[in-house]
Length: 297
Picture (cartoon, rainbow, N blue to C red):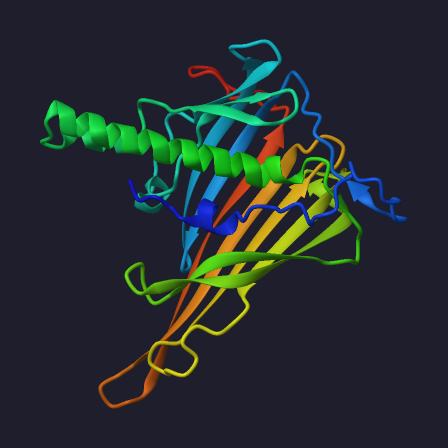
């Protein structure tokens, strides 16, 4: 499995300096407070698109809500659409996991699926039982990290947070910048967050209105600016379209752009660009058609 670093890279912890509705400060005129209130009954189609430098692959999942293992908890059951062919690129994407969360919207745990491509590959490798168990443990830890980060992107970091349209929230954070995973540096960065109101929740229903939260993160200082053969630039964008009354997401879109300079033998500078991103579209109130039946229009 190729662990996508998108979720980890594009999700930076929202620190306490973001205005919380729990504070005692007066609420500015026009302010929007994002509330968590997912319904107890839920079904949705989730379309996941992975984008890498102009190429894309797509997978489809189905969401359904179930009672959780303990009182007050709920299980968001995830099933991948059966019978769909996958491109090599789509198989590289971190898959969705079923998750358990509580009534406040806190992530509790994840549930991975044994039929994942990574576990299938693991079974084909010539490993001892001990080696296979160690690798399986690492895979499970990676899957839980992705599940937790996606929940934070979609819900967790936005609960009870107040934004004022037209104002920008600025947060100090850190991000990796550099030529490769072997030659890179974690640098100080700034995340800028804005909100737009009156946004259509989906293309299929322009009457229902949501908000769009946009986050842009860039390094505060240039990476190796004095060396034209090793300069690098980076930008991260994250977009969330959500219902502010429930925090049900309708779209998330993340993108990382990297530009890296290197010198040819003749001394000329060449710039290599890379774009990596993923998009999730959530369509509610639909369920998969059982195999062997036909949908009626």
